[in-house]
Image (tube, rainbow, N blue to C red; front, side, top):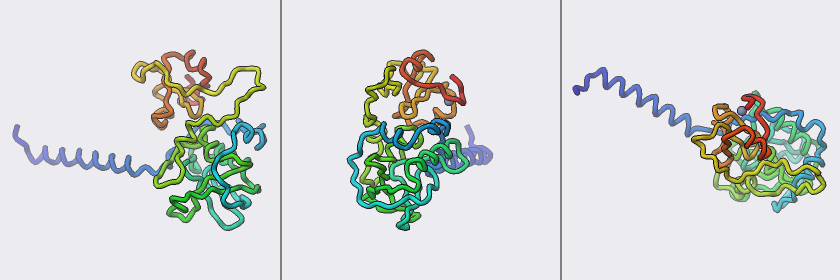
Length: 247
Ligand SMILES: [Zn+2]
């Protein structure tokens, strides 16, 4: 086949689009994260209700200060002048679904309270001058709680002293021994259903399950995906239906 100038133009256009798409993908800054956990989930819970679900962290409190402002679910201001960016996690930005819930959760735990910081030894601050740290309230790791509650996604940016994948996967929930019903904590063990035949996709982190076409599925990290061939399968494993796609 003879290659005409017209063909060359087409090929160039396709190349430009492809390169553009790739650069958008690689320029991901973690701002697109959203979740659909209603803020009402925490209305009736006190901070001690939430904290009591978690074991003490082995992170060390290196300094303490009072939280004077919660900007969003992953950024707070302290009375010692520090702006703190919760290391290893990313919560929805203002205007994105889930922003209010994640922010309210952090307000409930931190606002006007003394919080501890374990500052990232590998990288003390980000490019905006915010201190990168694990925020510790009553001995509990709030960064880890945000992940476990499904209120944040993992944002691992090495070099870092902390490895957030360990927080998301570790079993640091305190066993609920006095509950009569069996645990509703979703199992994160692998399902036998393969991804190709699955109609439903669960998020081991949030405990929700979705129709496979739900937009939440494309935002889910691969490590959190659990596949189900039937709705009953998902429900039996303790997953709750997404309010957007209504599986
Ligand atoms: Zn959904």
